[in-house]
Length: 229
Image (tube, rainbow, N blue to C red; front, side, top):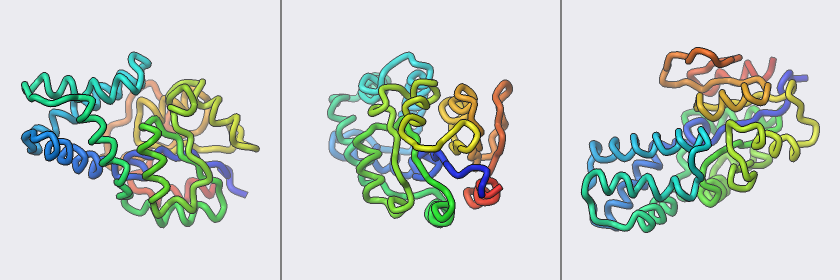
């Protein structure tokens, strides 16, 4: 029997290619709101968005504030005339249809599901995640998705993982593996809760000091050997 029969998988940029979906959603906002669209402007928005999600991971703001504030700050920075609430609604609706997967995600989930129970653990917006997962090719292989909005807490908090563990019969801190790309939410969350973790690091970033990383992979098929230890 596998050492890790329960696999907790992050969604964005672990299973789903969020970067592609996010770029398309940004262009849709620009189209509908008649705003300029360029890679330079998108990268500026991305920096603001990343800073807001980092603040969320630190518990400094809630998600309802985050999703609107990122557009308010972006519009303010470039003196653009649009409603940040409307921008966010357009953006989230566009993301719902993004089912583009990371390389090899489908075949890896299909193979892992033969011997493991697969669950998604995510901080992303609930409406987006539920819609996207329902339309995705990986849906048959995922038993359940635990979304921070439903949990009333988010990664990397202990409370979030208490919620997850209370809903998975048979899971323990020793028989599960968390797999994700985010140091601040996935790896730190696993450290906070005392569970094994695997850092999905396709960009080959340097590992940070002060955190335990049990496994590191650059390509999802590498997870097969780890999960089947």
